[in-house]
Length: 110
Image (cartoon, rainbow, N blue to C red):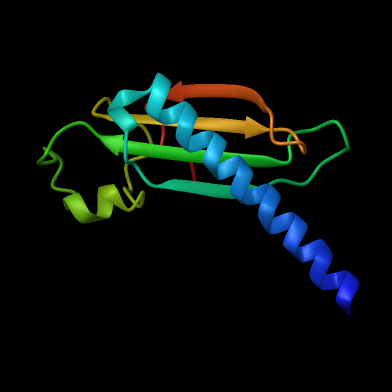
């Protein structure tokens, strides 16, 4: 049982490292997303594939012309999949916590 806890702690620490790295990247290279909430997703796949995806998005206008509530958009729950008013980023990370790929777009990553 002690081994299970140790493995779980290592996994959480690695996930925290990924989120911290993603926050630094977003703050430095995407100032329009500064302070946006980050969502961490664990990925499955072969050993050489990305292990984590971190997404962030923000709407650039204070009031949506399509009538979507601001709170819904800020929570990343906007029902509009592609919107020219949205800025989003998807960062893919290796198992070691290195950034493998960065995708900037106007897409809501689900």
